[in-house]
Length: 552
Image (cartoon, rainbow, N blue to C red):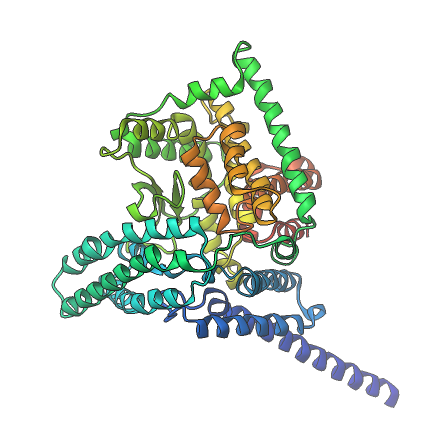
């Protein structure tokens, strides 16, 4: 009897101790997750960050400590989902350590200091006027300090970064001269005079910064944007959790590029055997909306993609939501040739999650050649194919599911490897479910996929010096069919965001592979709707973690 009681007592002690240790591990993980905003976002424009070298050093030290503390956690005591969160957190922090410790774009890209470009989102986004004015006051107060620190800390002259930074800075003056004052004066307030003074101060500091970019920055030591093979491979392994090394990924990119080219050639023969796919693409791109109807044309196909997604039961949307197509702010128009998408971050006062698809608008002051070039890059084909990518069921829908994720880490963080892969997957999904009106639009879809194939090639190529800047542009112009100005803006985006653009094609490739695995697992019970909901409810993480969770 004594032996029996002693055994019970011993088991009780072990269980209590194990529970205590397990709770400590969970508590440590949650503490790190709660502090990720500060360690990954550096405070942002609304978080008091002046972008000083001291803040960068402090932030770098902080993420190193976060990574060390995370790796000390005993993951054997975590649940399955907690382990996934642990791996995801480690990938996010590893990426920030690489960014600040190795890539150091804050020493060579002027755009790093122009956080004021987010002020437009504050003004136009959801929220009360009082909360917007409070954010605006903080933002405007920071602008002079941020730009002044930029002038102190930009140590490397990268000609294209200087050119793009100057364009953004010059075209941001309208923000402080017209847009912010108009918002401030739209209603009477005791804070108005103070805010106008802050706005004028920000404008003055911007003028000084512009002069620095024109006259002082070109005298700094010349450099380039490539991060180097060692850093690139560390990014693939530690941040994206991929098995590729740089050479393997570069070869994969070319292999898939040639495969898509073969599909284009085969489809072109079906459409018109006497013409190449390149000739057909030129014809397709010359069929476009009227310039003054460009916004409406995009909105029409956004609405059509929503109708198709819901009527075919592809992805349910259990929230009140809306997508609006709007002209892109002028100072952002040189950051990409087409536009960008802004997902809803919260519901508005009516409980509606509103996202915006912002496109570069047609401008009457252009010369005739520029107008024609714009139109052929905004044809019906690209509109019809891109609408599902950006809106239904692409980024807009994925963003809604992410906002609803019960796990804080997954709700507040994401990665292009899934989110952009999901966008491209939706282009493919629409082809598979007969959304595109004819084979000519299908051909345009394949050409747009070829573009994303090319992104894998030139992202690896540029940053590991397998390709020069000019060779990357040539790839886009001669092999993909872009006009040179559009190709150059495309390449510019990759130079300052290493790794981001591989997410499109590689992510889609991984999602399609997961779909096949899940289909085999579910057998007759498989449905696209079930697969899509399961995947979206998991989160927005490296695809290896998505696969683990899906197949668990």
